[in-house]
Image 1 (spheres, rainbow, N blue to C red):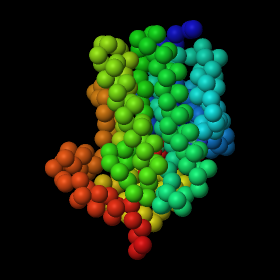
Image 2 (cartoon, rainbow, N blue to C red; image 1 turned 90 degrees about the vertical axis):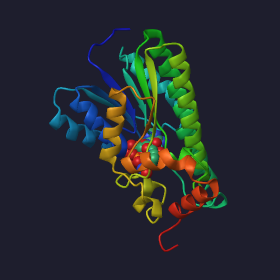
Image 3 (cartoon, rainbow, N blue to C red; image 1 turned 30 degrees about the vertical axis):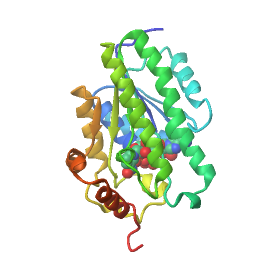
Image 4 (cartoon, rainbow, N blue to C red; image 1 turned 180 degrees about the vertical axis):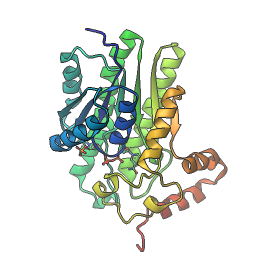
Length: 269
Ligand SMILES: NC(=O)c1ccc[n+]([C@@H]2O[C@H](COP(=O)([O-])OP(=O)(O)OC[C@H]3O[C@@H](n4cnc5c(N)ncnc54)[C@H](OP(=O)(O)O)[C@@H]3O)[C@@H](O)[C@H]2O)c1
C-alpha cells in the first residue's frame, strides 16, 4: 500500500451536523477528507461549499447506509482500493430515538443499534488493525454524555452510547499498556442545539436542548480538535458539561436521576 504523506481523515456522517463542523477544522489544517453518509446530494453540496474555502485539499465521498450489515467491510475496501492509508477515522454517524421504550418502533431501534454499536465496532476493528500494523493513527469515537448514567426516555440510545464509551475507553487503555503510537479518543458531547439530531429523534420539544449543559456544534468540534492535538484519550465537550461531569460523583444517584428525568422531559409536557 502506498503511504501518502498528506494527512487524511475519514469521517462517517461528515457532510452535516457535528461531522461537517469537524470537516471544516480538518480542512483548515490541510487534511484530505473522506466522507460516508446517507445522502449523495447533501455530500455533493457540502463538498462544493468546503472546496470553495479550501481548494487545496481533496474531498471524496461514498454514499452508504452504515446500518447495513457489513457496511464497514465495504468502507474499508473502498479506502484500500484507493491505496489510501487513513490517519484519522472519526466514527461520528449516529442517531437517537426518544420516548418510552414500548412506544418506539422496534425496527428503528434495531437500525440504531446496528449503526451506533455494530457499525462503529466493525469500523473500529478493521481500521485499528491497519493502524496497529503501521503503528500510527487515531480513531475518534463519538459517544455522548448519555453514556454516563441511565437515561429514561432514551433507554436504547443511552445503552448504545454506553457501549461506545466503554469499548473505546477500554481499547485506549490496551493501546497505552502496549506503548502503541495508535490512539483511540472517546468523545462525550452533551446536547448540541444546532444539528439534525433532535429533529431525527423527534426531540425538538425536549428540555435538554435548552438545558444547562447545552452546547453548539462549533464548541464541540473545537474541543475535539484541541483534545486531539493535546493527545487526550477522553473528551467531555462543552465548558458547562465538563463542570457537571467533574462534580457528578458528589451528587447522590437519586438526585442525578431526578435531574436527568427533568432534562429528558418535554417542554410543557
Ligand atoms: N446532537 C446532539 O445533541 C448529540 C449529543 C451527543 C452526541 N451526539 C452524537 O454526535 C454524532 C453526530 O450527531 P449530530 O448531532 O451531528 O447529528 P446529525 O446532524 O443528525 O448528523 C448525523 C450524521 O450521521 C449520518 N447518518 C445517520 N444515519 C446514517 C446511516 N444509516 N448511514 C450513514 N450515515 C448516517 C447523517 O448522514 P446524512 O446527513 O446523510 O443523513 C449525518 O451526517 C452522533 O453519533 C450523535 O449520537 C449528538
